[in-house]
Length: 194
Image (cartoon, rainbow, N blue to C red; front, side):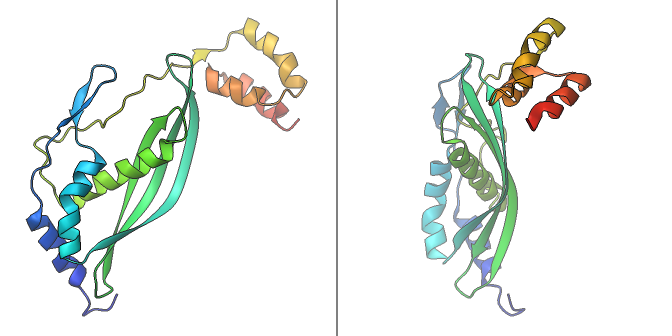
């Protein structure tokens, strides 16, 4: 961006002046339930102003981490965290970037989509200081994660032959399900390459 090219700053201030309160009018029906505002509410509130002031956004995922967990009901949850850079561009070629994290869980293939939506929502809320009536926003979906249990010596002794035999996926299953001692972790790493 050249020194004289700064339309992005003017355009972003103009967008901030256009935007109004985005209320929490949706209801999460899982768990205790709560009201929230979704990414579609934020995008719908900003779209016209972005178009009017000639601003668009590009997205780059800088980092992605995934942890497989077990839900309270016994299913598999994919807990994904991404680091995203959103870059706001103006018509003169000027731009400004914002880096933000997005975290979400899903039992299917939607964890990444949820992460992107959450990251974008909070980027927009913060970049444009969008009035939200209140600051607390736990988002639309909650998951209850089953805590890992201690791996007892008796169970560990039953699992060792499967580990030594090189059973496919056994190391990951053990890590996902149990809280390990340092000795158990060391042993698990020893047989990981088999």
